[in-house]
Structure formats: structure tokens, C-alpha cells
Length: 509
Ligand code: XMP
Image 1: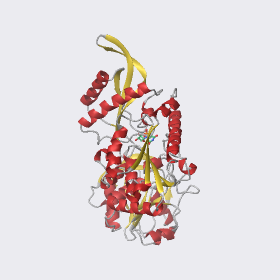
Image 2: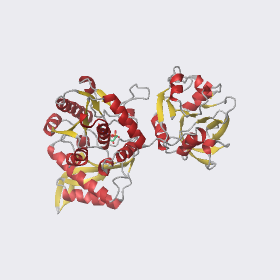
Image 3: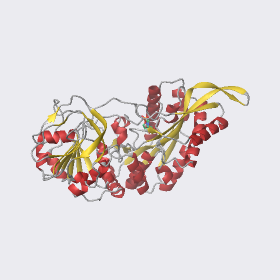
Image 4: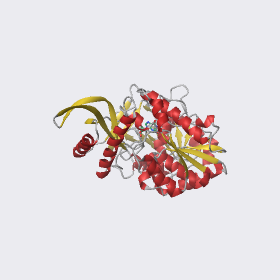
């Protein structure tokens, strides 16, 4: 296994994911991990992540220097490289300005990390400080125009440093460098697969839950479905699922879930129809954050009332993924700026004195899909595009009414039908319709119309942390627009959203 030491980079879990993509188990640990704990983990290699700090800042994170005496290979990335050089007696130069974005990497000397690579290619930089003088035994293995020491190696001790970020997709050959570190330097074995993950997770759940009951909210999406299936495999009938119909779901949501999970797995699922309660609570509300808060609170009320009907529940299962965590917490556990208050059942565990079971919290979406398939979940469910907890409410700009929900549902069905027909459903991270708060003038059948406008949103992404607008074929956009206007009463204009994330977000509210 590989230990990733977390210096607070927004990319530290991405490093873990890259390692796991090569079927090697990997664990992220805090920078202040005691050296004995590292020894006990017996890693084949250690990766020091990047981070927002400068070595020279007071209280900047540092590892115990004896980490470098363990005889274990180390790869330092960005701040991780600075930390290693500094710990071993080298010098780090303070930045006059940050270097951010693409750079051409020029390989300067043989390094196992750069095996079978061309002498020059693109890498992605994001740093302030940079390496100045190197400790004894280190050599410079690559440079860029602005950064003469862009990669270093101490071949004898098997210490490597990269100033750029090999874990991000923009660094060409980055994943290959990590692969070389894992197999050529650390001599890892390929023994971590979704099957082995699920076996381990099932055992852990059994151990933690024993003969107690777990309750869990099902949303119809892939995350909660996979988490529930995993928990169900571990404890069977002691898992009690609750599906709340908040009236903000898409067409057919409940039927699909019943067909794909309930019947197949013989899972306990309670369906609660709370549509009217939610609509009443949302009456007249137009502010996005207020909508989210109301929906979150109502959900907790309904869920709690239903959960109380299951006596003796000791645990709450959740399908939390890693990106859900990173958008609301920093790597050190403190709050960073909350971009949107994502709806979840926060607060419920304390109130009902339930312990959390979150078997997917280290996984990214694509890993969860692989796990879902390994668990035998139906492809339609595994490949469902994500759908937010507050549902259609955050895709209706302005007030939510039964009529506006109906309009949006109809346009959504058309959009998804056409996207599926074009063979694009799985290629897109999400594709959906948004009902705008404006009406515009049109002309239909010689008559002037003044009707609603719908926006189409379709994005590609790997993990929802960043996204690009999808370059959908113009003919497809034309067909969707035609159908929406012809088939849905009260729609006379369709527009396409060409904003990526950042600066936009995927949802409109
Ligand atoms: P944004 O709009 O923040 O969305 O770029 C990122 C991803 O999260 C989904 N999303 C939510 N999921 N509760 C959820 O469960 C929420 O409140 C929520 N808001 C956004 C969104 O659909 C996208 O996949």
C-alpha cells in the first residue's frame, strides 16, 4: 500500500485516486501522523501531497524528519517536494510571483519516473515557492522555462520530487509517472480492485453494525443505491431504506428505483409521499439558498418521522462521496467557503443519536459506478446521471408551482430521450433542462405568443468539481428545441448554456 501525506492540497484525494486507478491500495493520512503509525502501516511508498502553504509560513505543515530514514521511497509533489528538500537540508526560494497553468517540461536527465517519455511535453503548475539549492545526493531531472528545478531525484535513496502536479489530467504523462513510481520504484503489486474493496467494505460494515439496524435514505441515484446495496449485502434485512417523494423528482423516478433495487434485491424500502408538504413549504419562495434550506429541513422532518417507525435503529447509512466532502471542508477539517449548501441529512445523526455509516466516502463517482457494476446493480441505475437532492426546485428559477414543475418535467423527458437516442447519455456527466423566470415573445401559427423559456444544460466532467459545457451537435440541439416548443404547452424559446465550471456551477441555483 501507499500512504499519501495530506498537506492540504485540493488535489490530495486525486493523487489517491490515481494510485488506485493502477490497482494499488492507498490511504490518505494527515501531515502530523506519528512516525510509528506510518511504520505500522508498512507502506511500499509515501507520497507527500501539494498544499497551499509556504515552507516559511509559521505553522506550515511538516512531516517528522525520520520519515526519510524509513528506507521507503518518497515522492514529493509541489509543496511535498519543498517539504522534503527543506527537511533534508536544501533551500527553498520564496516566490516573487505565482506560476499557475501550463508549462513545457524538459527532461534533463534519466529518471525512472520519466521512463519511455519524450524529452519535452506539457505539465500543469500551480506554485509560489520553488526549489533553490538541493540537498546532497539529489539531481535535477527536469526543468521548465520559469522553473529550473521542476523535478528532482535521489536515485540511491529513491526520493523523487515533482514541482508540477502529475495527478491532474492536464499534465501529460502524469498518470504514467505515478505508475512508474508505484511499480518501478516502490515495486507495488496490483491487488486493489473493486471486488477486493467491496469485500473489505462488507466486512467492515458487518463488524461495525453487528446485529443492529441501519436506516438509510434512498434518492434513486447511483450513490445511495450502491451504498445501500453494499450495506444490504453486509446486514440484509437489518437495513431499512426510506425513499421520500418530495414532489421535486423527475418523471418516473420512484418506479425506476422500485424496479431496479426493491424487487431485485428484496430490500426493505418504505416509500413516503410528501410532495404536498414540500410544495406548501416552498410556496412563494424564490431565493436559491432559502429553497435549499427549506427542502433540507422538510426532508429531515419527513425522514425523521418515518425513521421513528423503525425502532432500535442505531446507524444511518449515507452514500457520501469524496467530492461531497471536499466542497464543504478543507483537507485539515476546517470549513472553507461553502459554495452551495448541499442538501443532506446533516443534523439528523446527532438528533437521533445515530452513528454514520458512509462506505463510499473515499470514492469518486467513476469508482462508485465500477463498484455498482461489481455488486451486480442494473446498468441503468449505475449509469444514471447525478440528480441533486433538492431536485427540480433548483432547476426552476423563481417560484416553484405544480404547473411549473409539470412544464419542466415534460421538457426534461424530451431532452433525456433525445440525448439517449444520440448515444450521448453516458458520455455526459449531466444533461437537463432549466426553467427560466422570464417569458419572451414568439410567433406560432401566425399568432403572437408570450411564453416560458427553457435552458438546456449539458456538461462533461469527471467528478463535478470542474466541468465543461458539452459541445452537443447543432442538429441535436435543434431537434430538442423543436420538440420542446411543439410538444410542451407554454414554451416558445429554448437556449443553450455555454458556461463551464468554474466560473459557473453545474446547476443554476
Ligand atoms: P454544482 O451546481 O455545485 O453541482 O456545480 C455539483 C454537483 O452536485 C450536484 N448538486 C447537488 N447534489 N444536493 C445534492 O445531492 C445538492 O444540494 C446539490 N446541489 C448540486 C449537482 O447536480 C452536480 O452534480
